[in-house]
Image (cartoon, rainbow, N blue to C red; front, side, top):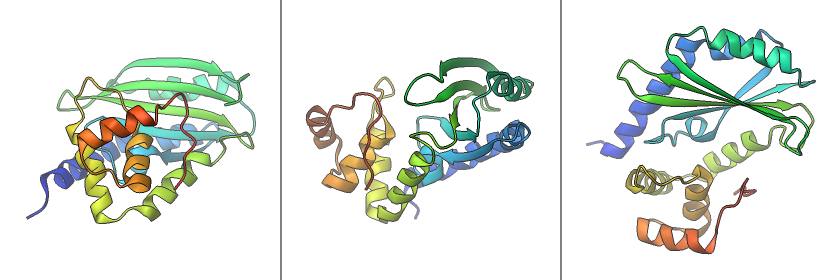
Length: 196
């Protein structure tokens, strides 16, 4: 019999992929000449309770008008209820950050993070490489450990996915109390630059 955690992960990944199709998000960004890549937990098959979909989007120039043009198309979906914008063009991240909230047919709220990044800048391709390396390091046991830790995390607790992955893959953490102790010794401040 299939583990219920794997079943929940599979169900939520299918729902996320349906949202991507329904919003036409990939073609919307391509329509402004952007390259769009799925990153984060959905790319790695590790999406569980925290309903988020992460994209990194690349163009040779960061044109605010074009970025807004793509988001205006996305906002046409009646399921998109809120959108946030952050201009980080003049930071080392060289990006425009978009966060959209989508209500699915079951009335569940999903967050879609779209980071519009300048091609050739520091984080060009970085998180795609992180995801691919994590996938290469995953065994069924490690995948189960990560999904179990995510499942046991209280909904009120905000923990970055990379923390689970590092704790399990690098340090062999496989229970929630050890994970809490591990986090005290490895505080995450800002972007965690860890690749297995």
